[in-house]
Image 1 (cartoon, rainbow, N blue to C red):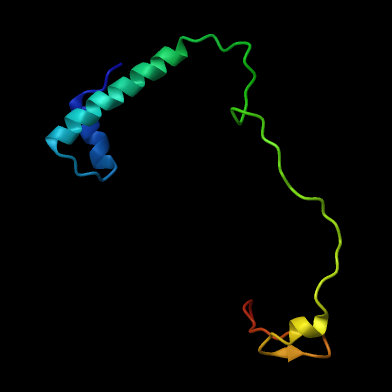
Image 2: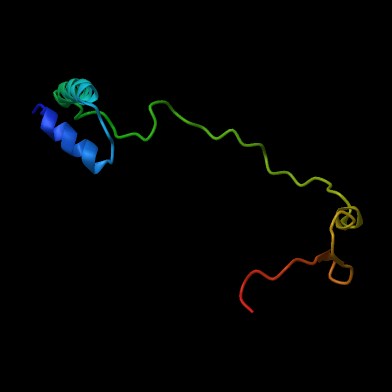
Length: 98
Protein backbone atom coordinates (compact mmCIF):
# COMPACT_ATOMS: atom_id res chain seq x y z
CA UNK A 1 0.00 0.00 0.00
CA UNK A 2 1.67 3.18 -1.19
CA UNK A 3 0.89 6.54 0.34
CA UNK A 4 -0.34 9.29 -1.95
CA UNK A 5 0.93 12.82 -1.92
CA UNK A 6 -2.46 13.95 -0.55
CA UNK A 7 -2.29 11.50 2.36
CA UNK A 8 1.17 12.72 3.30
CA UNK A 9 -0.15 16.30 3.10
CA UNK A 10 -3.05 15.46 5.43
CA UNK A 11 -0.72 13.83 7.95
CA UNK A 12 1.55 16.87 7.77
CA UNK A 13 -1.42 19.13 8.56
CA UNK A 14 -2.41 16.92 11.52
CA UNK A 15 1.18 17.09 12.77
CA UNK A 16 1.10 20.87 12.26
CA UNK A 17 3.96 20.73 9.76
CA UNK A 18 4.12 23.35 7.02
CA UNK A 19 5.61 21.44 4.09
CA UNK A 20 6.42 22.84 0.67
CA UNK A 21 5.39 20.91 -2.45
CA UNK A 22 8.97 19.70 -2.87
CA UNK A 23 9.12 18.51 0.74
CA UNK A 24 5.80 16.71 0.38
CA UNK A 25 7.03 14.96 -2.77
CA UNK A 26 10.32 13.99 -1.15
CA UNK A 27 8.64 12.73 2.03
CA UNK A 28 6.04 10.78 0.05
CA UNK A 29 8.84 8.97 -1.76
CA UNK A 30 10.80 8.44 1.48
CA UNK A 31 7.79 7.14 3.43
CA UNK A 32 6.85 4.77 0.61
CA UNK A 33 10.42 3.42 0.63
CA UNK A 34 10.15 2.82 4.39
CA UNK A 35 6.79 1.08 4.02
CA UNK A 36 8.32 -1.14 1.34
CA UNK A 37 11.14 -2.10 3.69
CA UNK A 38 8.64 -2.89 6.45
CA UNK A 39 6.64 -5.02 4.02
CA UNK A 40 9.83 -6.91 3.17
CA UNK A 41 10.47 -7.53 6.88
CA UNK A 42 6.91 -8.87 7.26
CA UNK A 43 7.84 -11.67 4.81
CA UNK A 44 10.50 -13.04 7.19
CA UNK A 45 9.73 -16.16 9.21
CA UNK A 46 10.08 -15.16 12.87
CA UNK A 47 8.12 -18.08 14.33
CA UNK A 48 11.12 -19.49 16.25
CA UNK A 49 12.59 -16.12 17.27
CA UNK A 50 11.95 -15.34 20.94
CA UNK A 51 10.75 -11.81 21.72
CA UNK A 52 13.45 -9.57 23.17
CA UNK A 53 13.68 -6.09 24.58
CA UNK A 54 17.30 -5.58 23.48
CA UNK A 55 19.23 -6.75 20.45
CA UNK A 56 22.18 -7.79 22.61
CA UNK A 57 22.31 -9.08 26.20
CA UNK A 58 22.38 -6.26 28.73
CA UNK A 59 23.89 -6.51 32.19
CA UNK A 60 23.81 -3.90 34.90
CA UNK A 61 27.30 -2.80 35.83
CA UNK A 62 26.64 -1.80 39.41
CA UNK A 63 29.16 -1.90 42.20
CA UNK A 64 28.60 -3.91 45.34
CA UNK A 65 26.60 -2.08 48.01
CA UNK A 66 29.14 -1.93 50.79
CA UNK A 67 28.83 0.21 53.93
CA UNK A 68 31.72 2.62 54.34
CA UNK A 69 32.56 5.54 56.62
CA UNK A 70 30.86 8.84 55.90
CA UNK A 71 31.38 12.41 57.02
CA UNK A 72 30.78 13.24 60.68
CA UNK A 73 27.31 14.70 61.31
CA UNK A 74 28.79 17.95 62.69
CA UNK A 75 30.82 18.54 59.51
CA UNK A 76 27.74 18.02 57.32
CA UNK A 77 25.49 20.24 59.46
CA UNK A 78 28.12 23.01 59.40
CA UNK A 79 27.25 23.51 55.69
CA UNK A 80 23.54 24.17 56.24
CA UNK A 81 22.03 27.65 56.49
CA UNK A 82 19.64 26.60 59.29
CA UNK A 83 20.28 23.67 61.59
CA UNK A 84 18.30 22.12 64.43
CA UNK A 85 21.07 20.89 66.77
CA UNK A 86 18.63 18.97 68.98
CA UNK A 87 17.16 16.98 66.08
CA UNK A 88 20.51 16.81 64.31
CA UNK A 89 19.17 17.93 60.93
CA UNK A 90 18.55 20.83 58.58
CA UNK A 91 15.61 23.22 58.92
CA UNK A 92 13.83 23.62 55.59
CA UNK A 93 10.67 25.48 54.48
CA UNK A 94 7.44 23.51 54.64
CA UNK A 95 6.34 22.51 51.14
CA UNK A 96 3.42 20.14 51.79
CA UNK A 97 0.14 21.43 53.23
CA UNK A 98 -0.35 23.59 56.24
